[in-house]
Image (cartoon, one colour):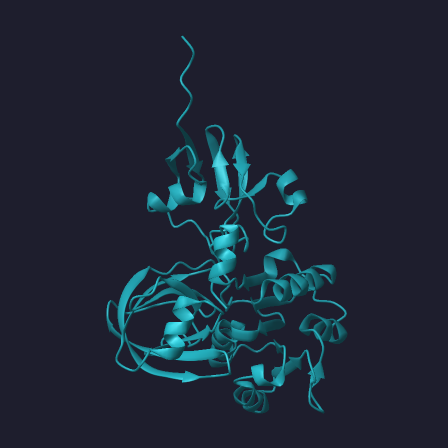
Length: 351
C-alpha cells in the first residue's frame, strides 16, 4: 500500500530545548508561539527579519518575504524566517541570538479615551487611560493591537515612553479606511478601547553605546518619539541623529517639541526633511538622501526606522552600503490595511 502523506513534522528549537509538532501548512513561528515558546518575532509577515533563524538540520520551504528581511545570500547560508517557514522534514532550528533581546508579557487592556486631537491634516493623536488589565510593560519602539468600538483591530506603534500612565497612538487617515474614519469622525473622550501587546522587535537597545540614527516618515514619528525620548530619559551618552521626513510642510508635527529637546540636549540633533517646497532653512528632498549627505560611514551605529515601506527600504540600503551591520538596523515598515489585504501581510504597525 502507498505510504500516507505526512501531515506534520517535528521541529526542535535549540534555545527552548523543546520539540514542537508543526502541522502541514503551519509555520515554525506559529507552532512555537502556540506551544508557549517566547520565539522572537515582529511583523509575522516576512518584512522585518526579527524571527530570523538558522536551520541546523532538515528542510523548510519559504513563503514570500522581503529581500530586506532575508537576502538570497543569507538563505544560501542556512538562514530562514520562522514566520514564513513551512517544514518539509523533521528539523532542528535556532533563532539568532541578540545580547539585549527583551521579552514582555503580553497584556489585554481595557482602556478609555482620555483625549483625541488632530496632529496634522491626516494624523490623529489618541491618548488612552488604562482601566484594567495592567500594568503594561513594553520597550520604546514596540507596537500594540488596538480595537476601537465596532472596528476591526489595527496595529499601531506606541508613542509614549515606557512607564507613562497614558498610552499614546498616532492614527493616519487612509482613504476608505473604516478604522481611521471612525477615529477621525466619531471617536471621543470616554469611549472604550481594547489594547493588546506589546509586539515588535524594533525597540531601543539601551545597552548600545555607539551613535544612533533615527528615521521617521509620517506617522512613523510615533515609535521614534518613544525611542528618542526614552534614550534621553536614560541619559544615553552617544550622539542621536533624528531625521523626520515628510512630503510637505503641512505634514510636519512635533517638530517644535523635538527642536526644543535638541536645544536642551547636546547629543541630540533633529533634522526635519521636507520633500516638496521646503521653507528657507529646512532640508529638502528625500530623507535618505539627506542622511547620505551627512554621513560617509555608519560603522558602529545603530538605526531605528519607521514609516512608509519605500522610505524604510531606501534608508536601510544606504546604511548597509556604508558599513552598518544588518543586525543593527531595526526597521518597522508601515503598510495600510488595504496593502496588507492585497499582499497577505501582517506588519508591525499601520500608517
